[in-house]
Image (cartoon, rainbow, N blue to C red):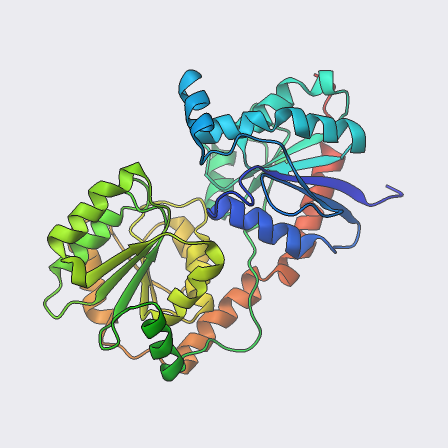
Length: 380
């Protein structure tokens, strides 16, 4: 090409909600926007309009209208939000004629695939499969796999290797080493009204029995002898969270845990105030929270799964967390172990070397170019 490759990053939840997918697209845009040979525009659900960032009209998943519309089509409010952005993104495609649309909102992608002929622009659909969705992928052109496990799973299911690329999620890694300054940790705990004289176990994710298995974490903390560590649960709290919170009150007592929901930018201080990070989920599409914990130098305990092994890269404790007692056993060994500055620095450096945007930018650029060159869809 004699011009930069024109790419739309489309994620309706950016500016509306902070999950893994939305955080990734926000950071990926910021981390890749100045990559040579790429002309990237972010299309988001809310926020400030800028020359290379545009807000798509949408019905936000957090509102009543989206919940009502989702119920009408027998889907959820997230699907309603995705579908509501279709007219806006279609107009932008006609006007700016992108080469590649990079997305994780699969229901929007299905509509773009279905109506591509009517839109009249031969764009390529590049699906970032971080959910992850199972193969095959009949309604997209190219697949971004974020771990070797999911790439190999797709190949085994018959997806051609040349129609996908494994490039991990990236993350911003601050300069210097992880800060283990004890006075600062205590000050943060005071400000956040957390205990000053106890170990703090942190878990970040949807506060639910599903996927993140926060109920499992609570039960495992309850297995520990007193005085137990203090448990901090951070993440989305919705109508399904009540069961988990009731369990925590019954098993731990209100004085031994907190559950909070807040913007992603504010989670940093909780990593700095904690002593150890755990996640009860048995599978993850990627698990950016593991990288966040390592960046802050925290010891990590996770389920022994190929995705977690890849992401942690030897810098975490892995166990079969499908079994009762497995997490509490790991915590018995990990909590008394001193987290030295050397160990914390090694954890952060491992993330910097493998997942920093400066390291991954050439790989993303090659993926976008490969998608644009190899896949030549007809106007279906």
